[in-house]
Amino acid sequence: MTISRRAFVQTGLLAAATPLISTPAVFAQSGRIQLNYATLKTGVSVIINEYLKHKRPDLDNGLEINITNEYTSVSSYYSDFISGTFELGIGAWDTYLRMYKRGVPTSLATTITTGTMINIVTRDDGPSSVEELRGKTVSAIAASGAFNMCKSTMQDLYDLELGEDITVQNVPSPAQAMTLLMAGNVDAALSWEPNVSAAMSRMPGLRTIFNLGQEYEQSKGMELPYFAFALRNEAIERNAETAALVHATFAQLMDQINADPMDAFTIAAPELNVEPEVLMQAYEAGRLQFSSHSMQQPEGRQLVREAQAFIDADDAEIDDAYFAS
Image 1: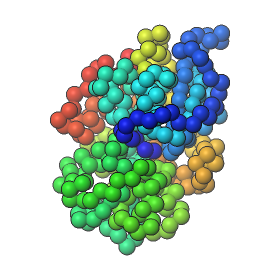
Image 2: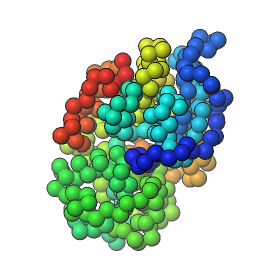
Image 3: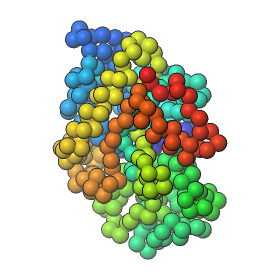
């Protein structure tokens, strides 16, 4: 999934999956807290969204999450979150941290996936190791959180710098990164699931030579969190339980996916234009891991703090206020 930090543009296509709400989070007649959530209609977000609609763990945990919009434009999505159009957002935790540091009233509630989603892929006639990327060209979204994480990790572990030792061909999406690789226009692609496995299913011989989450875990001995849910602070101010309920909802959903991944993939696959087996391939290969950690717990906060220190040692500090409490 693209984590773009380009200039914000107009909002994406409206595709309401549940009824729109016209007011902020309030108590519904059922006693549940209503929360307006917009989402991204690309990548792993689709798996989360479709299974959320199917299983409705929010109703089990005192919430009623209303999906008000499904965006195809990532920049529009984040622009609207910043402006307060919706209160619950999905994306890389470091994207929301950058918002917070710019003064956006947001707090991280929970993580849902790991950095194993992010890979560098080559053809069978291309580089077979990270070291062989020196002097080569890699397609990547240069403004993405995934790119920044990979850049720091490769500098620390391999003394290779993306953009210096390795030429970067900037692309607008993770799918486009894989397209350039398959066409033979670049030596490698920095992309993430499900785009990696989708390309592998279409072109035998593609292989991963770098998995960010695995490299991080081998170096640090801990999981690298990646995708997460953040809240606008107004939602927390209206009800202090909201962040805990968001974590409980998505922790339950991650458990449900892990208990029967093929069920989740079968539901999501048509929306992603892939076969369920492609998603299962990514899951079984360890490139698509669902793991939830609460930012109300010290363990969850420490995972994010450690990751930030690893990614950006010069800006390692994270205020406690960034974590939803």
